[in-house]
Amino acid sequence: MFYFTKTPAFLKTLYKSCIWNFSPAVPVVYLTFDDGPHPKATPFVLETLKKYDAKGTFFCIGKNVVEHPDIYQQILLEGHAVGNHTHNHLNGWKTATAKYLANIREAAGYVRSNLFRPPYGRISPFQVKELKQDYKIIMWDILSADFDRELTGEQCLQNVIFKLQPGSIVVFHDSEKAWDRMNYALPRVLEHCKRQGWRCEAIS
Image (cartoon, rainbow, N blue to C red; front, side, top):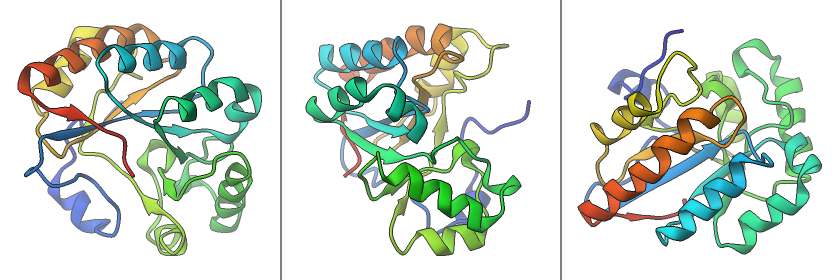
């Protein structure tokens, strides 16, 4: 499995209308969580964020919101941001644009947000062009890789803290697949941010 844990400059240039990070001049980092809501992982994330007085951004799959509306409402009630992550976790490179956009519209019936993140980070330039009229497309500059079962929680933690700086957008997953690594790395990343004096805020 090949992926970048730190997004290279050429990708940011290729998709320059997407948001990859924010200004490093402000002591804030942005923790994001993909693929929920999940009945075990998402409540853990919410409890952990609350412990550190932190806010996050949850890119929700529409069908998971349908299955777990109470957890979705909890995300909102606790002051976090949400974003559209398609209804069925579609890969934009493997999906016709019309079908892809229709799936995003279906998710939009449940996830009220002008933020969008493409599953796997895979989206075509034409899909970007169509979506940017209505959405801020939020990518990332640091990938924890908590989805990778060949890694340990400690390796995922190192993927984040060795690259983390103010303005960074970090990806975690509130999912079954990522659980064993995410539940180790997330509190330690938050503790690291606390020691550095960096706030963790939601993407507006």
